[in-house]
Image (tube, rainbow, N blue to C red; front, side, top):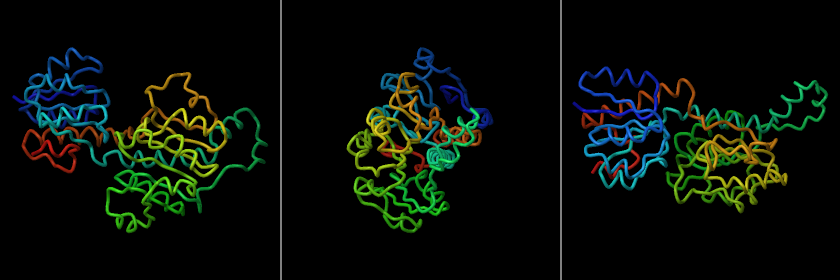
Length: 321
């Protein structure tokens, strides 16, 4: 009987889908229980994994693993080289949480522009006349640079256009006509576009190419008073350099769902800076998204066991050869 491991809890909708198959042995392994995972993965056929790391030693302990179903869209917590070498496809949830992350990005843009933290706290302190400052910003007529025009970036672009913004997009890995057809302007080099962007949104995976993509030099090139939003992965942005850019007043604000270290240290200066809007890496974690992600993970496992895994969900397609 095929065995499927659920490492860390997923929504019951996904568990129910797996349980609808009487021919499966479902094994739930608690978060951080490495001993049980190492023991159970030895003869497991499928693994559903959330954000915990899956190191090479775990993969090498498996003897018949046919799929890793990632409860998310990134794979930086999995040793992809080992998984691929062992012909284990890593399947993600596709666009199951794309809308959720796109909405969070717009929230960051709006909250930072409207100085939501400052004005909310002022009203609660009885400082109503703070309204006379009228120093918050409009999205209307502004320019946004979207780095990465994938499932999330496309949705962010559509929502920015609804706010009547000028939308520039940089993604050299897709046909540029896709950006034009979406009513946006393609940009070949994101660094060249930074000085004219009022907002910069990051929607790329974390890899060797994108680690500290937004570094001190990139931040210095950004337009004075610009706002940065990162709902992708923390190390894409140099956190220390971002704090410097905020502290100096070069940037007006930043919205961060992700951090270099998670959870961030309590003494991380970005946590106490008044121009930051923060979330605990839950951009893709709405109730609806949890249901969609859990059911997609379960379906990916079932499809892999049945020999019909949709390659469009597979991150390392070479493992399918």
